[in-house]
Image (tube, rainbow, N blue to C red):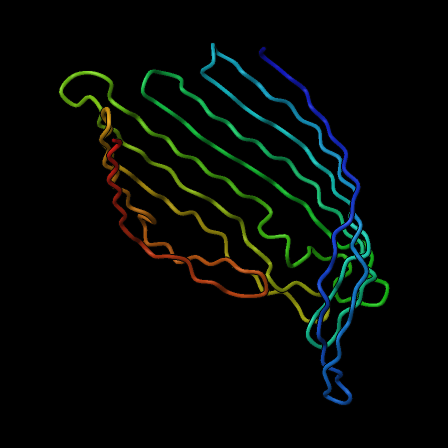
Length: 231
């Protein structure tokens, strides 16, 4: 009832949608039908319940091997690749004192194309679909439980993402979206059947982007309000 250990193994396949590529010689478009990708995954981890139910944590390590992956698009696409994805994940929820709640998450992922017999533009590179190597989030909130301000609360936290190589090839070079950290804050009032939540997102008005071979601007500083009444 304090510590548990888990492990799992998965072996399966995933169908790949057909792709249309342009013949660079004739300019004609042709349709390519692919075989399924094949993958195997191993994961091991632990779940913790400590400090008299005040701290819950899940820690895990995984290793994924994928074969028969499709590399390239547009003018050229081949299905001869292999890659791995290995990483660590942690999720923690804590209530160290009455009224204080903490939620945190962290993940780190290493991924590389290890085989690309007919398309070495990707060989040895981090896949463009892998996303940032490191992601982290933290949210802390405190709710007053007595006195004239009973039911009022404050929250603060944010999200972090390391740089993201959305174009990463030996011949074409690398295009990287920069890392970012976005901070948010909230104030709320919650009693019985009634609650009000006011939140300010992206406090510092950070310019940040995500994408997969694309650049997608994310929301600037913005304000949100929510009103709830339970019948």
